[in-house]
Amino acid sequence: MNIIKFHIPTEVRKALKGKKAKVDTVSLFHAMAPQYLEMLKILTAEAGEQKDVDELERTLRREDPRDRDRN
Image (tube, rainbow, N blue to C red):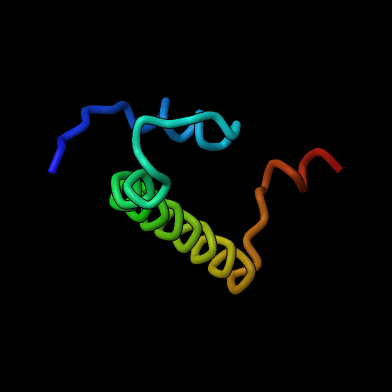
């Protein structure tokens, strides 16, 4: 078994361009999967937080009092 040191972003860019990478696609996928899944968790949490704020604003029909003064 050989150990190959590689930079994940560089190898992903090569693979996306159809160039030859240091490692096969499956190995590259396994290397980047933990980071990708963590990013998805963060994005999902942020989207959920914004959804909660939007729902609360709709429920309370909150309006910015400054908007009323402008009209």
